[in-house]
Amino acid sequence: MASQAQPSEIIKIDIFCRVIDNFGDAGVMWRLARSLTAEGFAVRLIIDDTDTLCALAGLPAKTPADLIGKDEAIDVVLWEKAWDCSECPLEPAEVVIEGFACRLPEDYERKMALNKPLWFNIDYFSAEDWIESCHLVPSIEPKTGLVKINYFPGVTPRSGSLVIEKDYEAQESLYKKSLSAKNATDSLRVFFFAYPYGPIESMADAMIHCGQKLEVSVSQCEAGRLLSAELLKSESKDITVKTLPFVAQKDFDRLLWASDIAFVRGEDSAARAMIAGTPFLWHIYHQDEDVHMVKLKALEKRFEKHFTDRALFSAWCELQEKMNNGTFDCDLFKVLLEKHDKWQKASVSFARDLRALGSLAAKLSELIRKR
Image (cartoon, rainbow, N blue to C red; front, top):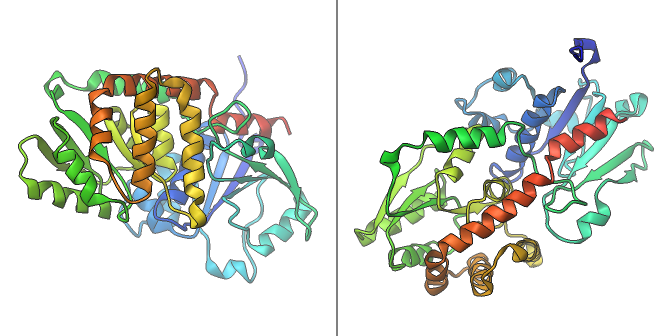
């Protein structure tokens, strides 16, 4: 039997995160911090917006930083703005993770030159071909000569995979067994989480006129409030609307497991829908020069082989692309609902392949321990 690691033997990891967009950046880094802690590392998360992190951790706003990660055994530190142009009091850990090329405090980076930690930049998720040739490629910082390894999450064997918790499948099985027979319904259960600049009115119109009964659960966000208002105006007997409370990140998967269709936005929620095998429509974060559409189409291409119905695959791609260009087609939505069983089979097949690739946290852990 292997002996337990002593405190002095536990590898320390610093994760740096700047919150740029809503819950996206914080969500990815918080999930990574939780998963690396489960891998046996001592994790310190240095983040410049602890209020956002409070919500993800399921804690009241303004919870002190040192209490946010207490239940997860994560040391949370507020990234003070002053550190970017003056002294940073933190001593570098043995492993440093830079979230989305956020740039470290210069003083912290100078200290890194002394102990030469293993340094990773965890980049944004993409299904594009080019990330395979860039994944794990080192770059040298000219000021310090330190080596930084670029790590790209993805959905192929040559990418960095997605974060999948060690107990993910056990928790999924347990939760689905717990769903009461009383929850059985002849309605399709729709989870809605999108950006407010999406085509909300035409989304609502498509739901109202889709010809099927829908139970629509809207998340606590501006888009959810807008959709709920539009659906309730119709007074349709085929649509029921429920506003969900904001849930902690660790409980988000349950919303997907309980849904037949999910509208998801950004990176973390889309990744969770992929892993869950829940049929989804991705409202991707818009970028200049339509870069986001390239990313969207790349993911669709990875999905293609899992659809046995070519017309259904085309309908899914076309509707998703139109949604991200500001329109929502009722006829295409009807096709997806009418062939929901095939859509679900394709989603489950893709999820099975993703799970077989392994977890980002486990792969990163292996790289760290091999050092």
